[in-house]
Length: 314
Image (cartoon, helix red, strand yellow):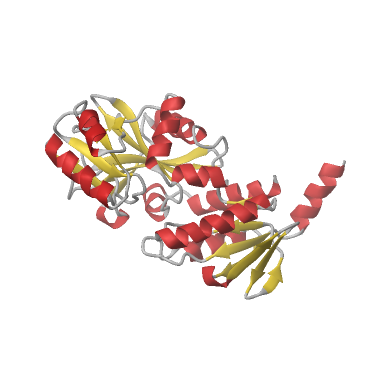
């Protein structure tokens, strides 16, 4: 009875969402407005805020301020990739909001894993999710031993890259060692990965929302070997009528569950290889949706809004 009353009250009262505008809208220039408009249409009260205007105190309780004025809200949301300093600031805010009992897009521990390809692969390995074999080392000498387990052609990846940035194809082991050495000198972590050469320049993107797959499309990048990249460089084709749709959906859901049992949103990139079968490349924490919307004609922003607001209600 009490739970029913609380649910009824929540349905009457608009959930208050504090939405932080992406301070680095390089790849997601229009996503902020699209998401805010969608949440508003779904009866959420959305307050826009800039990163530099947010502050909080933590002691016996958390208090959050906008321009030094105390605010009350139910959920905090920001969307899209940011530069390292802004992202670290976002993580601090996200951690405090989550610790205060409010809703966030992802749990702090989920954010941590999604931001790091190496941590994703470790979780994939734990839960038997298929992905191209990787090699990890923390010195040049140990990397030389690791790279000998790979073919001459290999993929080198920054663990914190996105949109294909920081992904390189090397044509010999010496080239891989040189690239790793440069990364080590810059105090960055790189990993080596098996190069699957029968599907260069294309991947399958499955969007998962609220833990359930909702769309699938194929992205083709004709200019290079990369299977992921900037969306404006890709041609996108819906696979919603593909006979393999359910197979793609099942794998994407399993990959997301390896990170978080109820992932709010994730863009799962999959290689469909004739030699290796289906291989998960990565999960994007804030996937671009507009290309998939154009290709599939599905109301993906509506699905996203529903998944996030359901998380607040729960």
